Image (cartoon, rainbow, N blue to C red):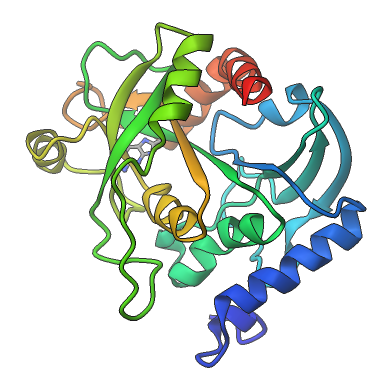
Length: 275
Ligand code: 8IG
């Protein structure tokens, strides 16, 4: 664990670090406030180009609290995008995963920073495994709720936050008005980085899960704590272990993401334009 990152210092306040990060973003982008933020997970990256005009691109590690990306296929940049309607979007292409073992503060730092830049709508996207057999690789799904199986939380101390309607019904309805065929599902966040065993996938199904992944739930909790409205979307890149008969491979997951990317990115851009 790097001691250079102020989030790792026990007496630092993660919200102070997020405020400084937001000031640095304002300075480097020339944009005082952002309205919408998007975290683009695997398969969603092309949306950055389709949303509007990119007016600034910053390597995320130049901003306080951000880590260098750990994973191939994850672009470590923050972009400021001018949307057609005049709103400003902050596009986060630098996700720190829980399995990287840098602690939850670093996992949710981008979300807290987005809130500190003025963002009211947080869009969290990911690549994930599907439990519903009717979903094919390449299917985008709205997240309707989550089950957090990390046994961790971004909240520190006795901070009680209501998570009813965490994944905004209003924003899901809006997404449905753009594409009425969009299905919804409950996202189960596992710690990873291993994929699940078939028995774990069956457990997730029995407890009410439809999607298995390694991000998003902790970020959504932090987004709600910061008062933002959350829209969550998963790209089903593979059926979960045991649901699909063949073993899971990271290469296949990347390939399914690349195939679906133009279609789902265009869909996301249309949803954002309607917000
Ligand atoms: I892409 O099948 C992707 N991410 N936990 N399980 C979990 N995460 C994933 C999966 C999956 N596919």
